[in-house]
Figure (cartoon, rainbow, N blue to C red):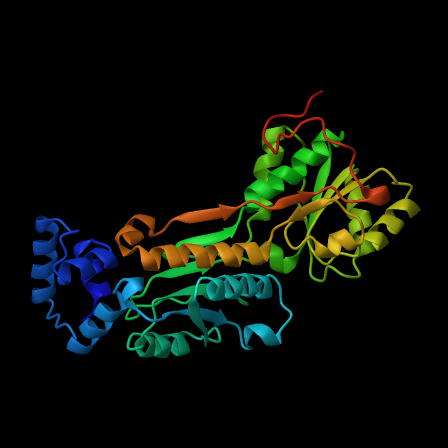
Length: 355
């Protein structure tokens, strides 16, 4: 018998049940009595050791020598041993901010295993951790969930079905900025090309955003191009552009933009505007392409800042539970031949194109 089962039985949140079982005045008397009666009927018996541990965890930061957080890694290798983005950027931003705030951090690996996560759940409930950040997994279907581990958690860079706070890139807003910039320079037929992982991943919502915003602008909507391997696909992208008569194109990361331009030139399409979106801007910047920098390290840093705020202000944790924080990207206008002309306004989205 655990707090989750009591919460499901009574209809209250796990946090509310936990507060009621501790006799907190932050839960109404009626709710507390209902929860206590349900717990008694279900045979709930609190663990003295767990109660002592949680009391120590909930002590004010001023009363503790060191605050400790877990960084949950759902991949099969440590954060620093692989080049994968955006995972590495999320981690580095969170790590640097944790150290700047005076927190100790430790990497906890689930290896995308429900069995491993269950073992960690039981083990971590007895460790003196004040909270944790949950980072994206390699699979779009694995999200670690915890029952016994009751410290506050924040999801970084992914959307989950949990009630935890989530900090991630504003994919809808970023896509809106990219479309708006293309519209302002006269584009009226705009396509989108992304890698298949970007399209399938639940943490990415670019295609939905693209569809909605194109309709908002009153522009024709054609299906985005799904490429299994972004590199070496310049022929497929050029064919997609020519076949649909696009004058604007939004691309994801790791595309060979110079090769795409050369292929478009061979088709006589020299005026197609290309904008980078849906990822790090570094590789687009190398080719002089204008676009959105999502700022993965910034997202990790903000996740750690919000986790720290919840840890050090537990009274506000219930209010912030389940909050979704969308972090806008930053626009860079590119350089050289691929640079977009100066904008006529600073509007970042919405509205229909001027005729």
